[in-house]
Image 1 (cartoon, one colour):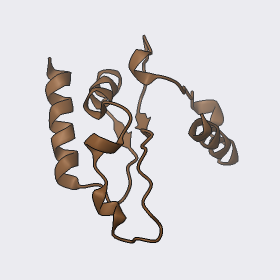
Image 2 (image 1 turned 90 degrees about the horizontal axis):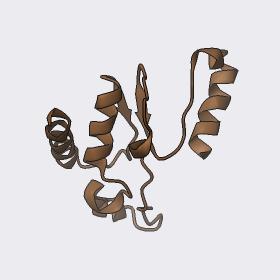
Image 3 (image 1 turned 30 degrees about the vertical axis):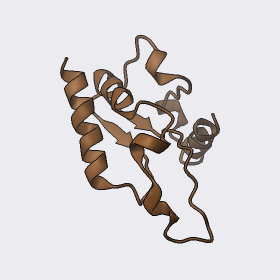
Amino acid sequence: MKNASCSLRNSQVYKVSQKIDFLAGDFINMKNIISDIIFLNPSHTFIPNQEDPESHKDFSLKRHLKHDLPSLIAKSFSVSKKVALRLPGYTNLDELAEVFHLALKEYAM
């Protein structure tokens, strides 16, 4: 909910809040959603060790995200063809490609 309130505050600052509807909650279980774009900011449990600059190399989308990311992305594509995904800058791009491959396979079913 913190991210939604931050986004709402930013939309008010830039005077576009009347053009945006914000929904926060368990996206997988939401019904009858229509949207121009979906912004996903999946909670992850991995926090790099600040004293070890190499600790981020242990990050894995599959191991450290709380949600089933492929299903979350597939659900997003069922709602909108535009999906934005916020992930740490040190995300492994090969792993991200694999996650999207699984998501698109699930979406196509």
